[in-house]
Length: 446
Ligand SMILES: O=P(O)(O)OC[C@H]1O[C@](O)(CO)[C@@H](O)[C@@H]1O
Image (cartoon, rainbow, N blue to C red):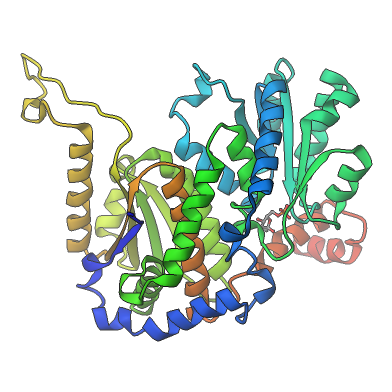
């Protein structure tokens, strides 16, 4: 069986193999700590064995709920922010037809997202299209108190109730939240919504393999059992494989070795725009997990070859504090051949008869060599194919590597104390009851 592969050869001009392998014992020790729950933040490591723990009944329940929604709605709005939507969006966009929004021949509901911003125009326009559509809502919040999704839910719930009545709205709203605590749990019980639980020991950014990710993915028509199977395959592979061949441990070790050499920015690059939102998910995973105590690699991302015509200049010749991690898909899902043209005005006949992917792969190789020559170390993750199984492998690979990498950095990868600062200022500025002192102080700064 093929797995996700990690290669670091194109980094060896900048960091030696010994400097990467120096992390061998430490990374293995951290992997064990994650499995045994003995490291920092160990009350949030429930995600480590989610793929092997999730039961057939749980998956069937999610699929049955998705099916019943599919009968009723043409659009499902997923309301959530951060880890409460990024995993679902990453997988749905990676697996969907690129022009899914046109809804041609798609028998599954279109999944839209809200509650990730506080833009009045976004919410207006969303409600404007929803008022004439059969829609449902999947509201996701672990804490149940996050402002952005709470505002969006208040508006869309009212709209849905107006459109179809309270009784029918109840049938079309699914709440995914804490098992017992929080405003959303209280509301769901009060209103009698179907609910799913986000386990206590799984934080938002590690929750894609709970109903948080799985329900919206199932509604979009993707095979969640294959996704979980892929994640389980990477879980087992990560445990069973020696450091020298272990993609997650090698990734954690290589990025820390590069960080120690002053490479403080990691750019995740893809050559397939379907992976754009996998990078968005990855940025939260690594940014919230590692960026603390004045430490951490800054996670950035680019879509190639598009961004070679914008960010490519900086990557080639800007400050040399970056390294690049390329996700490459070995085999595309479709075949397109470049045609012969009798006039050949564009001079492209030398490519006639070849696949588009052959050109894309040479763009990838050419870019990698150019960037390495320009002083940017490259790591490369190869996915055999873009499908549910290998996406499951990729997500779990990034999660487990993130836990190990955070432990190498000696931070708690499972908390995010820094995100409170903006919330507290916003509440103070909005004069939220209970924030009187903060309001007084912040007004003095204005
Ligand atoms: O699911 P919740 O509690 O609404 O939180 C959403 C997001 O907000 C954070 O707590 C802080 O940004 C993230 O860690 C989380 O993914």
